[in-house]
Length: 43
Image (cartoon, rainbow, N blue to C red; front, side):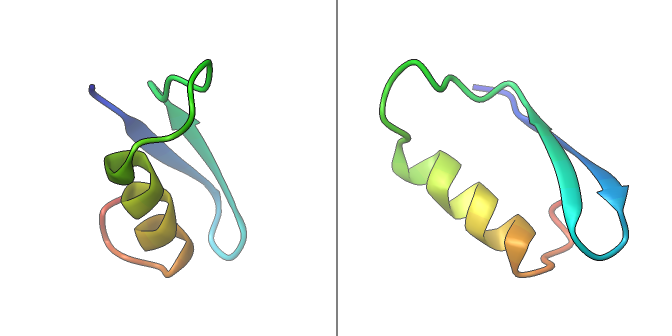
């Protein structure tokens, strides 16, 4: 699964594309979101 995070604001907003939200999130998605929220340079 290819996901893209686009920063919308330097402090608090981002857009995540490519996540399948029709099923419960897998560990990869959870880790990606947690890393993005922690300010990781993954985006």
